[in-house]
Amino acid sequence: MMSGMQTPVVAVGATDWAWRLGALVAGAVPLLALAVWHCTDAFHCAAFAFRRRGTRRARRLPPGHMGLPFVGETLALLWYFNLARRPDAFIEAKRRRYCYGDGDDDAGIYRTHLFGSPAVLVCSPASNGFVFRSAPPGSFDVGWPDPELVGVSSIVNVHGGRHARLRRFVLGAINSPNSLRSFAEVVQPRVAAALRSWAAKGTITAATEMKKVTFENICRMFVSMEPSPATAKIDEWFAGLVAGFRALQLDIPGTAFHHARKCRRKLNSVFREEVKRRKLKAKLEEHDDVMSGLMRMEDEQGRRLGDDEVVDSIVSLVLGGYESTSSAIMWATYHLAKLPAVLAKLREENLAIAKEKNGASFITLDDISKMKYTAKVVEETIRLANISPMLYRVALRDVEYRGYTIPEGWKVIVWIRSLHVDPKYYDDPLSFNPDRWDKAAKPGTYQVFGGGERICAGNMLARLQLTIMLHHLSCGYKGCLPSTPKANKWGCHVL
Ligand code: HEM
Image (cartoon, rainbow, N blue to C red):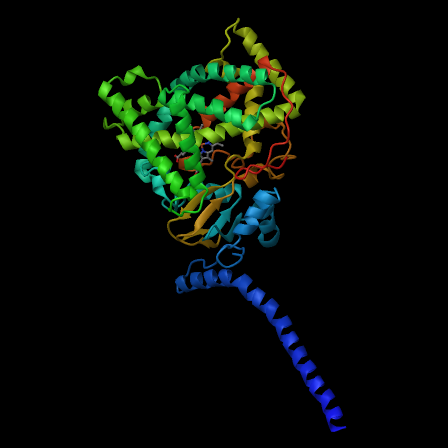
């Protein structure tokens, strides 16, 4: 009887403990999750408040949240960009949650934590412009994690007066009317030949073929190299180098980063040899290309660029101009294939120009200036392609913007893409509509080439190459049937 009585007492105690434990766990798990979720954000907010204690000026971080420990919001960004294929959803989610202003009152600035660093996202015409102008002077600059990969004396790595000087050289070599005139002559035979060969093949992989013809043209324009096994190797090294920019910075054999550094050294040595060869021959005028242009130019004090500056400039120009241009050309052909009415209007304008030329098969810079509809197709392609969706800067000091502080050392991500797909600035922004360019874009809402002192040095060359491709394509071919492009890992598009 006793033992019969005791058994239920023990059973009640155990159940009680089990309940208590269950309740504790049920309560602790969400608390723990909450603590994990907020600890990075709380840590950075506390560190910021501590550092700014005693200062009278704004002590507010931009609104936002920094996500999980270590990874921050990187996984969410990659999810939206690469897997969900909704590249704008990341910033939209921030806006929905943290935007305290409406329309023009939106400060367009949020805190986050991406790729291992605390960061501030900026995404409005005004806030982007503020960062591009680096206002006040010396507030922001590009912060390349590995200067050797981009080139220590490359235009994208140097700052201040040195950048301004180098930029004058580079602009002179690729953006002056004379250079553009000569590029127009140089690239057309290859573009026309490429189109003939694509038509003969019947089916092509557009991205591959566009890259091939763009690279051949770049080799010719920049260093007078014709396609050969040597240029194929150079192409391979550039591909390795580009992969390194997107890889984890782990410099051990077998990693993409290690391979990229090797590729960079090989590229340096090929182009350094070429510079030496040209100097030895002392016949720079033999070559009508960018390398000789850069070697010949002098600044106001009569000084020329050093060999490393020439080599780094050539590598930077290929990096800046290769994938970007071929990708823009690929998107143009895609949109034209989908929109026969646009192709028809384009053809009408280009056939009229071709007719005016009395049989001359290549257009000139003067012809291009008359091609108004083609210019609109070019602009619309570049707007919608969003080839550089975001640009990177680093805050060199604490910077105040509309009552918020961007702390020194934080990354600043200028999300230019969001402007070009915002219905506030572009009606039905995801549709390809060249006629929208009958009216100029609202000030500050078209930043495809960046802004401020680092605005794309090759923007005119990119437009020129695209125009030439559109001319030969629309005059000579009926168009093509596109298959749906695969999402490109780094240039996700909404189709
Ligand atoms: C559609 C094609 C192109 C797009 C969308 C594009 C976009 C951009 C953007 C957004 C920047 C600013 C980067 C920043 O602020 O951090 C930039 C800079 C630059 N781009 Fe382009 N680009 C294109 C074509 C080209 C071409 C064809 C070249 C040269 C051959 C070129 C050379 C450069 C250089 C040298 C810079 C650095 C300028 C500086 O730091 O002063 N780009 N580009």
